[in-house]
Amino acid sequence: MNWKSLIVVGAVAMMPLSMAAQANILNAKKPEDIGKKTAEQIAEDNDAPLPYGYVDDRDILWSKTVWEVIDLDERVNFPMYYPLDTIDIGADRRSLYDVFLKNIKNGKLKDVYVDSYFTEKRNFGDLAATLKKVDTTDLGYEQINAGEELSPEYINQRELTAADIEEYRIKGIWYFDKRQGELKYRLLGIAPVAPDVNFIDDESMDPADAKVELFWVWFPSAREILHDAKVFNQRNSAQPLSFDMLLNARRFNAIIYKEDNVHGDREIRDYIADNALFQLLEADRIKEAIRDREQDMWAY
Image (cartoon, rainbow, N blue to C red; front, side, top):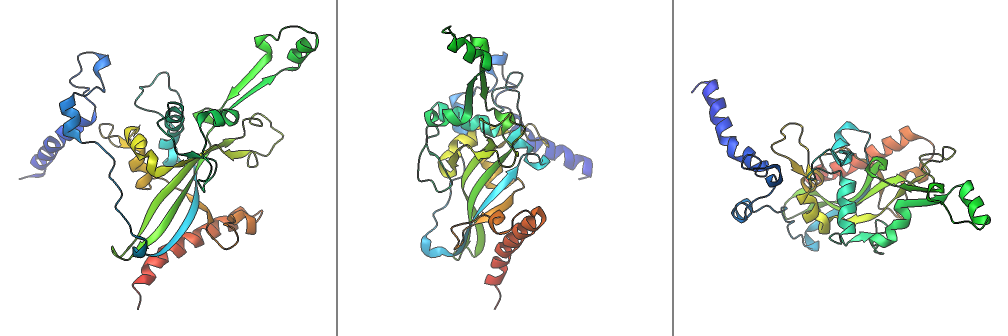
């Protein structure tokens, strides 16, 4: 069999898989049918996130909890940021922030917390003050002081959108499973980070000081939602990825900014201040120490 025949056989073998990923687009008789599968197709797909295996505490020989930041300015992290325009694109493609916000609004995503320690829950009503700002202009105050009814044009409203998200912060645990004999990673939580809506247009404030964590999502309970939300695959649009696969496979670039430590889990910038280069070197040192842990397990 020559190489041309091999390519043809490979293409034919992959054709059913690629066509199935288009969600019935080739069988749709009208645009409204795109994305709608029959009950038989749904049963045949058996589409669900791969469940985590049970890990007994006695099997964890060593562990380290780390917090990382995912900068959305980096090209490799663009799948979490785009698309920003939700008008001219299909409903099956949304940014990660839009997926979170939509499911918090409709009540499907319930495990939303204030911080990365997951002790205090929040609902969409609690988040309203951090996601939207309503302000009255000076002319509006003059109307109020004059006893007149406030005109709508004198009310400024500013709401955070997916375009305002600058980074994501994640919390996870690296652990050595002595039963499997390997180092593994488990993602525990993720948080979108944006400028404080009250100071988002204030040019006098340092942008780094204005960043706030909007909310923290307990990742294991959000896996079903993130599995249904698809990410555009630049290499093959017929095979989109899910956010669940993207995050579990660590198909992004992140930098460690904190690890669990005796100093109350202080951040790197707390003991290495005003030196971005040394902070990056410290983050790399922590990462290499985790990697070396697996190699040290096999050193006698």
